[in-house]
Length: 226
Image (cartoon, rainbow, N blue to C red; front, side, top):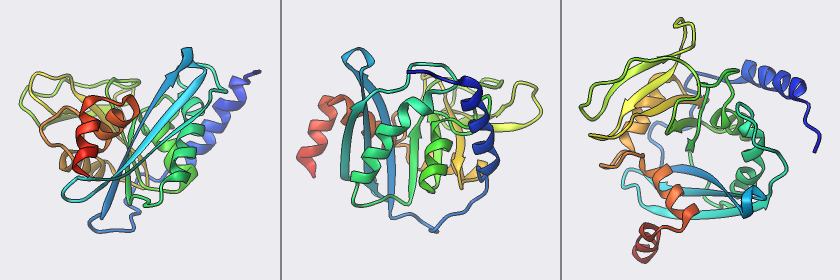
């Protein structure tokens, strides 16, 4: 597959201009919150995307879908959303109960060109999204206190513009990197991630999605409870 990075970079810059970092929500309190997780099989030949839908405020699993599609895009740092998006879109089309808000395992605007997978997905599907990343991709920050729910701002590489938050979601765990995806403000992104925490490092939507995608024992227990 021939990749024109200059063209893709320009596409990301154009997408970034359309990203809305304000609350453009269709709810006051969501009835359903979704989560996503993406992995790869067969040495990367197959992209596996899981989307779960949880009811709110009880955060119980009501629906899930796993889509597997042929991987058409290589691994290139900074352009992972082009690699992950096709499978996520396929899973999204299969979900019957569309969530009001989607927590995405990955970056939102905390990306060198402002368009991580959470922003890419939110923009193209026109849904409110929040990026919930396990590692920093871009920017600088001060470590939050060790106390759970401590947080600090995540800044761009120049330290001039906020691009997200660094959240200590659990004691003795590395922080999460939270950023608006699309149609969500900075404060709302942080607030909803915190509201979805139930004692684990990951918020429930992405924790469930990870369990579904990986078929972890936890997921089998969840299915028995449905």
